[in-house]
Amino acid sequence: MSVDESAPLTAMDGIRNAYYETDATKSKAFHDAREKSASEDGHQSSGGQLKPIIFGGLDGILTSFAIVAGAAGGRLSPQIVLILGVSNIFADALSMGVGEFLSSKAENEWILSERSREEWELENYPQGEIQEMIDIYESKGVSKRDAELVINTLSKYKSFFVDLMMQQELELQVPDKDHVKESMREGVVMFCSFAFFGSLPLLGYVIIPAKFPHLSEDALFRCACIVTGCVLFLLGAVKSFFSSLKWYRAGMETLLLGGCCATVAFTIGQAVHQYLGDDADKLE
Image (cartoon, rainbow, N blue to C red):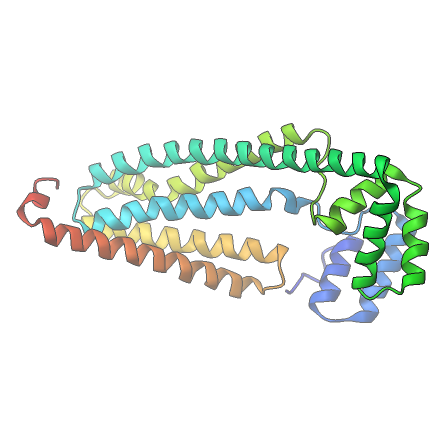
């Protein structure tokens, strides 16, 4: 991933770029600079909302464009495309937002209940829990002596040790105390992302006819294809900043997968139109 050399880099940006460039010397220099400033943590913090933004955006634009492509294949009028598209997008956006909130909240509550159980087990049978952690460390290649030294030391700090047990035994990340607000935030982000990106393929059916009223339905569909393709590529490129893929590869991957979904929708719409024959013409 290339970066503008003239732009000022934070320590974390430099570390990340050094990884992409496989430059160990540069990585060491930026690590040392970060330790001196002690102003940044070690990993990306903005990735927390990445899932609802990318997932919501992709789901929204693909759902919307599938309706457009299916309607185009079925030879439905632009008015019907707008009615189906707008009503479906905002209903689905609300459903996705509520679903994200409830699922995230339920998962966090379950994790916290598991933490309470682990905490109770540590209080009532500390030797057993400590031995379980020693066994886990040994299975990862740590010698028995070192594992016992580390675990016996860490077990003195009960709250931290319980969180460590959750990570190592159950492979669960303990949520923050304000996890309900975080779940609600994820739901709102999912709703907004779904609604915003989902509306983009439909804008062409509103804006373009106002400027060019004589354009054919096929031309409107081609405009929707171009807009959707650009947005899919953009979403994929943005996703690359939180993965090891190059931005253009991530963009092309998302574009190709989205194109496959649209092709399926168009083909099915075309097939249904041919099957219905004269009855389908009444819908146009």
